[in-house]
Amino acid sequence: MSEAAEPEASFASTPLYLQLAATLRRKIFEHEIGPGEALPSERDLCDILGASRVTVRKAIEQLTDEGLLTRRQGSGTFVTERIEAPGSQLSSFSEDAEARGAESDTIWIMKSRGQASEDEAQLLEIAAGAPVIRLSRVRLAGGEPLAVENATVPADMLPALDAVDSSLYRALESSGNRPVNGRQRIRAALAGPTEAGLLTIAEHSEILRIERITRRADGRPVELTRSAYRGDRFDFVSELRLP
Image (cartoon, rainbow, N blue to C red):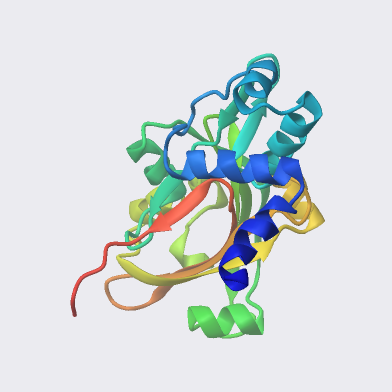
């Protein structure tokens, strides 16, 4: 009997703002408040939930820190819209954005020529010190920074640095080196200070680290890309089938 009552007692001892945050979180997960939908004002939430404005504000701050809510200056607080990215489809950030009807953009950090490190050479199956092109950029959709991408490509795959504008894959396709398959690893991580600054998120926010290696039809590696995607905005979704 006492064991069955324990969870309720534990919840009752939880600070009120966390109880309120849990209630709002459930409403978001169950789509009672849909993606992109505005929350009622703090005053209205106080009336609806019977809580003080301080409690409501702390609950909203908690969910904002978790990435579930987004504050828009002068407009209010909204449920964060998440992006479902295809986890089993070989496409570029630009192509994915276009498929969603969003306008993509790029802030370039670096375009340079260099020599492959031992790590890069092993993954790209080229000699250490072989010429490569390195591309680092922040990817935006709808004006919002969503990912940091760092790509290394064998130099003979791209005839010129200026060939890459918004889409690396289109530049590779124009030189006859479009990848047709690949493999990527996704793991959860926390944003370091540089990534947080580039993505305009708090340091130690959740991000998704993605390492992708793609190949041409003849099996030769084309691209090694290491990316950091905002964990509060992206879900990578794959369809599952029986083998």
